[in-house]
Amino acid sequence: MVLTFKIDLAKITKPPVWRRVTVPANFTFDDFHYVIQWAFGWTNSHLHYFSHKPEGLDVVIGDPADHEWNEVMDSTKIKLSKVFTLAGQRFYYVYDFGDDWVHKIKLEEMDTGQAKRADCVAGKGACPPEDCGGPWGYEEFKKIMANPGHPDYEDTSVWAGVGEGQQWDAAAFDIESAKESVRTVGKF
Image (cartoon, rainbow, N blue to C red; front, side, top):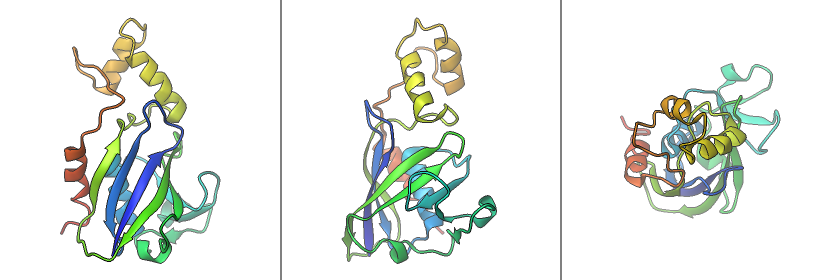
């Protein structure tokens, strides 16, 4: 079975940041973590968890070593097919406990076909830079990067790796790069 998910980065608009991925139902939540990381363009530099709720300590699935304060199901042992059973079902993925990037996951479709690899099939919007301060910090980052006359423009450009003569494009999304990265998940 193949599951199709739409994953939205919460609290990010103008433009929104989202990805649509297809994932084999026999993938674990640990595999799904990497699918999300590579589809969005994150660098897997921070802790994460999956939950029924977008905030708080209702951690359901993650790495037990990272969540000593709460009982957690091991993401390397729980298959997506055990949790995602109905189209329309929602779940959350939280990445970077300081910036709190909440990803809203919606199961759009369950296809009886077979697949060995995940894929990124659509998306919109640039992934925010790591450690930019969460949704609020990203909004501030976009304002700075849209104004070359801003007093913080040069330092912010260097920090974000935006080369001289280049501009940050919040609407940019390279589907081919996302596909290539996501297709490596589960590759042996």
